[in-house]
Amino acid sequence: MRVTSDTKRETRERILAAARRLFVARGFEATTIRELAAEARIAAGTLFNYFDSKEALAVALVEEALDAGRADFRAKLRGGEELSEELFLHVVTGLRRLEAYRGLVGTVLETALSPFAHSGISQRGADLRLAHLEVVEELIAKAGATAAPSVGPVTLHLYWTLYLGVMAFWSGDESPQQEDTLGVLDESLRVFALALANPAPPTSGPATRS
Image (cartoon, rainbow, N blue to C red; front, side):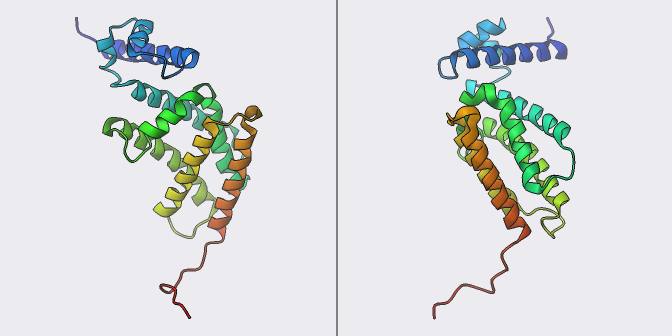
């Protein structure tokens, strides 16, 4: 029997729904591929036609949550906020959507966003990074924090490093409602925005000793 595109989409959604339930209820490490397949009512081999590993499933769930977070961000943005406030809202709406998957974030950071990640998963990580940074670039350019026609790669790299650090901190934050993370994020983004508004003057060459 020919498998239609509708059937493929329905099967993929069943797999994701099974992963949502089992990863949240049992944890990532304790959940097996066989259990995921049984929950999705498919053969274990069929699951690999859609996701080549548990880690790929974790990345898909995180990507899905962050996509929803970006939609939340657009809906909450009112205009007139300072750059640091907009960046803060952008990150926080994503974290709120990720709340149920906090236990997956470490795995995603390691397997999808690390320079040493498996090529198939790291491509999904690259897509996740690009989607996030497109919004950041838009916000920085709108704020006029840089005189360049586009935000430079060094700026975005520094921001992304900051963001990954916040994500790692948040994944293990046991403070009430992750208040410690919010404090770290707020202060970090204020410093970042201030640095953009007041860039250091260029140097003429390597420093010399007197």
